[in-house]
Image 1 (cartoon, rainbow over the protein chains, first blue to last red):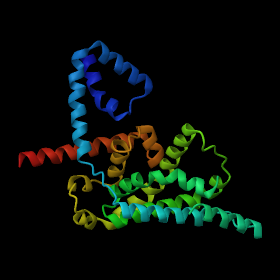
Image 2: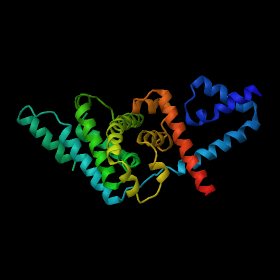
Image 3: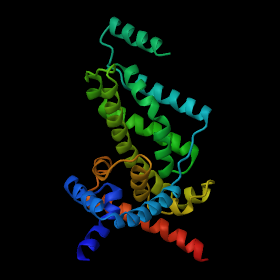
Image 4: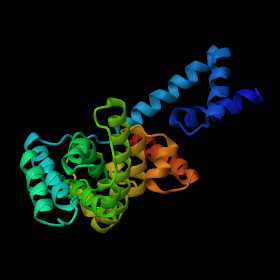
Length: 101
Length: 160
């Protein structure tokens, strides 16, 4: 009984992924040898599915996505550049920008 | 790494980043702005290491690993900026949120972020620790609180 309580407390951490690998292996071994325990895991899983449904997963409109990607591209091209050392450095940057269009 | 290679690496993350940002600032424009600001902060801070990094993008496994690493780094900046911004916006952002999800947006911004990292992006506790820079016990506590408060709100709704 005591053992069962210990493993019951580990259901949520197991589903959360917060158990260490040795604890996880121990937990899985216990579940494997106690099939009746699975129903309790299933009920916790259902609870977590419910929680998941209460978290918004917004979709971005296609045109907003395009414009956001463009802004990211601009940021990357503007901020991720080495200060051009000379004429050839500047040419290299311009060439890279032209290629990325 | 070339600039355009980096852009190609992060471009597929745009939708995910937007979704994560929306959890912190529930407004389309604010969320888009948060994505851009996080990207800019990341680029400014990591510029040197990015420019001097040699990567083989032809290797698919490498590419996915690198993309995930950058995703986590970008989320770290997003968490920092977004939590502060969300606190500044306060209640108004929740009221203005047209999609509902009041229970979720009623949670503390850090809890919302941790919940999103776990339940949407599927990061494990260690990865969430790394992204949020919170100690493990706080990550676990936030996950627990978030879950408890959401389910509590649902039960209250059923009982009314």
